[in-house]
Length: 169
Ligand code: ADP
Image (tube, rainbow, N blue to C red; front, top):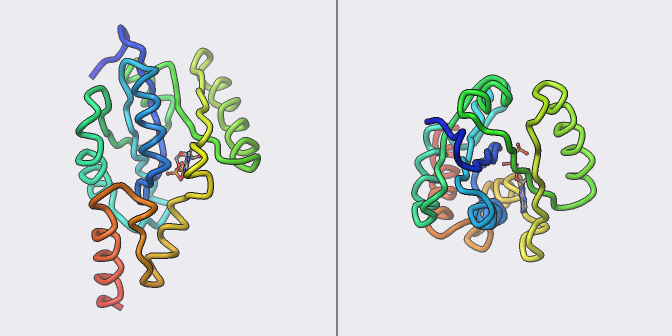
């Protein structure tokens, strides 16, 4: 897996779960870049709803109609992972000024660590500007239907996960 010849971008995130906002960004990036890697970050310090393996399987199924998109998981430093893959571009989404404030600092920090590693920002589609994974989790944890927020087929999996969790309590 070496992407040095093609114009590849890594879209890193938690995607816990992937929302329609994320999917829209992936589709748009796939029209700009030769290759889009959706990178699920393994973060042992962050409690997640879905395991990394579950997220990778779900995302793989959802993006299978986008020929130049691929899901991967990674741990450790983003810059190290980009170096391994030969990637020079990071993709992040911007929903509002809050996102911008946080994201610009991360992007600047990344260029200090790895000069030449550029972060490309795509603004959210109007339809999804309010949408976040945490909102999806909040609605689903209260028993609400999240099918308007996530790609087709995902809502039952989110509901099932909360029903398993409530049985385990
Ligand atoms: P992280 O924990 O790294 O923020 P997320 O999965 O929450 O991971 O988000 C990954 C990226 O997708 C971030 O850049 C975030 O701003 C962007 N994003 C999240 N939701 C949306 C949305 N509705 N529209 C556009 N971008 C989004």
